[in-house]
Image 1 (cartoon, helix red, strand yellow):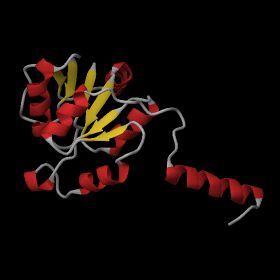
Image 2 (cartoon, helix red, strand yellow):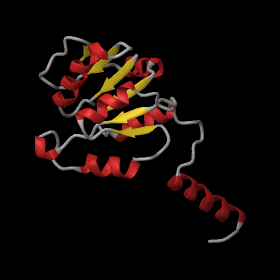
Image 3 (cartoon, helix red, strand yellow):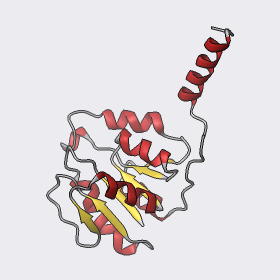
Image 4 (cartoon, rainbow, N blue to C red):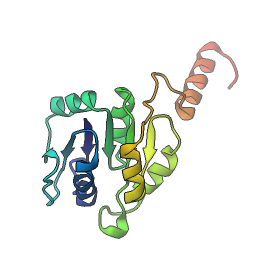
Length: 159
């Protein structure tokens, strides 16, 4: 099952409409958390909001997650070792106040288990691709650098 989430703060009808249009051609069922959007999908099961337990169950049962570029979803995908496709909101389309989600995907692009789709075509390709999930403890330069500095500090090593 493909789990799509747009968060709870802002609508993201563009993503939900794209997923709904692509769903009949996919080999998996799709469930979408649609948030505050107006568009009601017809080809996928959906709910505007989910309780935390429901959200966790959908994440754990998903083969992949599709999301706006919200860091909470990225962290959840990493925690449960699920590949995540990020489809950033765009300020120019009235989907957010600024383009910080474009900056987020630029910073995350290329990390293990994180895939970025900036167009309808890229989203379709990633939905049909075999995606690799992140491994437990996958390298993360910022986190690993912090761990090294803390270990050096505790051991009295290099500063």
